[in-house]
Image (cartoon, rainbow, N blue to C red; front, side):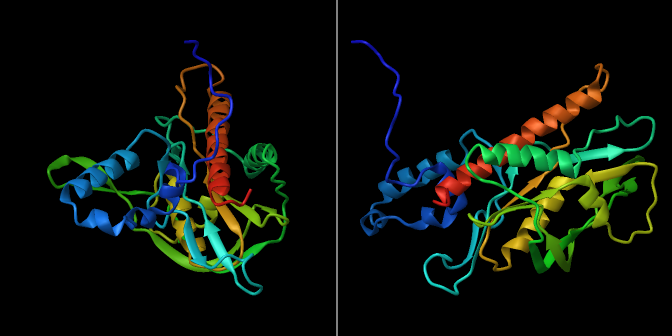
Length: 277
């Protein structure tokens, strides 16, 4: 028998992994006849654990693919906000300052915008800069200086004490919007992180950026509002490359751009699972 590769296959009628990850409550739906069979319940639970812990990109588990309201295409006047999960590619953390710290290479807003638009355009999504503003949403309050306190278990050692996550109300101008498809995105940059900085009496020669944490907090704030758009929140991966190499800064930026492309690619897959494109 000759083995041949499968060139095309039908889209399954059952929900795939990405849909389940975006709508975890679907896992609670099981046939009533299964609930009376303890062996079936055990097998089903084991299968779910394997599905959700299988290899693949990391997803933020808080309000994944949060849906508020009802489908805006169903009836006039209904509004919905579909916010994609945070697709984690890159730690989104970096430090700057002090001669002992390797300076990271941050992506500028323009560089990130170009990467996101180029990747989205491949799937027919045409992002443009617009004046689309989400009003009165919860925006993260960030801190670039980290306090260090003595380790109670080792007085000769100092450990970082990170500020608790805080938010404040504000307006957010989205970075890109495809009006015809109602798809928008926001890229959380280091400049954003600095702009959202809260008041602190701590000073240090080293600035620390936790852009991924800020992106997660921002996503939670966006998910609470209704505006009739499908929104993706991306972040600067702040890729790490051996700083002893030649042209390390350029290599870090290229690595970050590639990680950002993967964030956008997963967002597009999410849009497909939501039947938006």
